[in-house]
Length: 454
Ligand code: TYD
Ligand code: MG
Image (cartoon, rainbow, N blue to C red; front, side):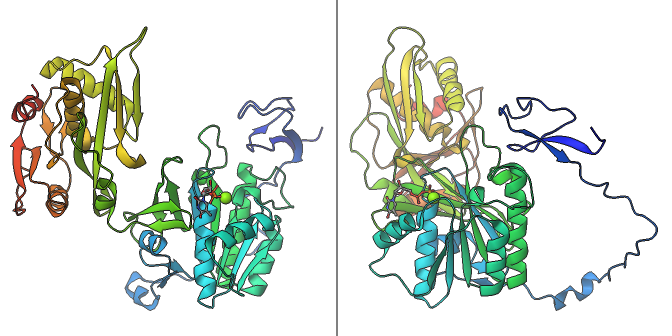
């Protein structure tokens, strides 16, 4: 065995000095292969002349044109991108399987190609026939300029982009590509990174945008979006509860604009449709006069979104009581149940407790603590609350109610949707909001007393 041999796992790229049947790093069996070690890098030999690069003053930086965001025409996507796609950029759209990434990008391809732009859809994951079926479902006619390429070799795709220069290339998905000059299976960390870098170079060279689809799996995801974050310009995340019809599209990284805009989309038979008035949409299915329901307000990016929190409490069966949540942090629920019991004498510790953020929204935010506490107290006492009542505030372990961010925007949204009473943390009722009356509280007990739930 010569010195420059190493053993590399084709799944996770871990390196070992010796062969083994199972990779110690990722646990894969039979994935370790012998490879030539990379030549020493970083050592400069005197016979290689390296030319220095010119440096530029920041004062002259005005000479560099700002990135131009080109609207795509798909409003949810343009919102999260801060305006549109940038020429020569590379964007990763990540999400769990079945969440709607291919649907969203098929819609994008249809909109752009209908506007006379050439779009190339590279399918490594599904067959062209499957993609075609999806497109037929989304649109009665297929624009001439929407093309597909059934290919998984990254270097071939890059060469095609550089030659054809399509106005947009969609790669579905990055995990299905392989660069033939590198070891490792498609989807391994090394392959995913190298394929993305090859495509990023093609995007720069052709000065056209490329969108990569990235699969994220809950368990054991070795080559998720994290490893691509620094290779791409933008990372968008499509998330939601798969069984509900709402999806959130948010930017985790965006080199050309802010990352705090979020688009709410609804999955329909016609694909993902933007929901413009989030609060009205989420309030419209609210059941009247049910104990254990209360409205609070989340911030989705810059936009307030009213959301209903529901609790259901039943006598516990045999064994440990059940705690089930949807869209709510279950550790937070445990803490709130303990605080309710110890600080307010509202004891649901020995009961089965179910708490939902209605509509399948992700409400893991401490600003909804007070709403969860009211929903639980209301459910336990079987006392429906006034449907025009809303609440926000964080709860501490001592039963104190803490201020939250952006109270003005949340109050305005509650007033807009016709709420008449709101309970808020001390010092957070500043804004005059028409017929909405805000009552400040500094403890959970005070809040429960106002509602007659203590
Ligand atoms: P898909 O876009 O294939 O998800 P991903 O690419 O993220 O794996 O599909 C998501 C789901 O959406 C799929 O179960 C079918 C459904 N769907 C609709 O409800 N309406 C539609 O118009 C389309 C195209 C798909
Ligand atoms: Mg897909």
